Image (cartoon, rainbow, N blue to C red; front, side):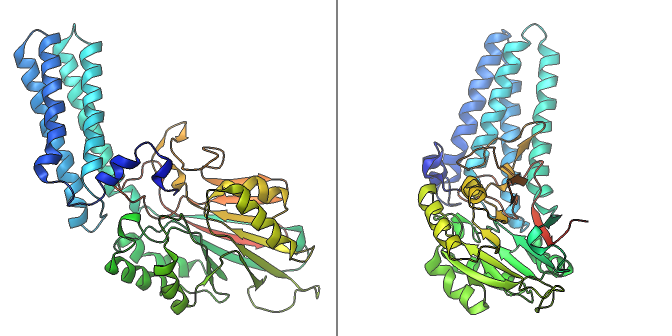
Length: 400
């Protein structure tokens, strides 16, 4: 995803990024303060100290449960983010619910208290699901993309896209990935950026674990990659490892790939090649568009082109320039989505225009992967209604 330098929560996220940055007593101050405020408000509204004590104590118990859940994640080897910011976010949510319950149901104290307790339990259950369950429900999206440039050729190319790994430590999600990818029988594997978590991109153990993971991926036509967000993928750290593994990083570069499961000529005798174009991620879309235009100008007029770019933000330019297939990630699909609305945050300059999935404009097909990992910094390592994803694209002359 895009870095947080343009996000209003950036400073708070940086302050809460490292697990040991705040002492436990400092982290506890916010839940204690909000529990005290909740108790005072309920005692005042209902004219009874008992109600205030009940709500205040309940808030503290739920904060302790949230803290326990977050602290358990690294011990279970499920995720490795800091406790502070997710705890603050959950506590603020619980405090808002307590205030709403006090304001809306002052004439029914006992039902209001019971309803508040049930809603707070629901929040705990949803948080547990979003942190313990959904991040490991990896889905495979199968997509068939036809191109008139392969019409009657008999050639089919299977591309597996992996995006936004955000490796901190290998969890069962990453350990299962090589077997999952091998089962898809890819001709070509592409990595569309954000290989490591921002919080761990200088961590030697995380770098070693990423190398172990990528070293288990294989495809007969190779593995191609582009850099992700500039704060996340640090080329001086990652390039030596990727070079050693034989993974080709396209930095404003082009690679030619035979467009068939077995390299050779097409059935009609024509020279069929896929031109893979890769650009490094930047927030200046005008500059990126100029670079893309220059790269495409060097290709044959009837070229079959695949653009790898970390964000989907270049789609208007890619469609205008006639790119055939464009693969991106970055948005995580929002990571946590609302029913009927989808992503609230996408970190895209186009917000929800290309939040996740398949888009077509002109002759250009874009697929925006939800990615595998989760955002770094101090953000919650959670997914809700947005499971991680591996994409398998079959490129062919005619869709079945």
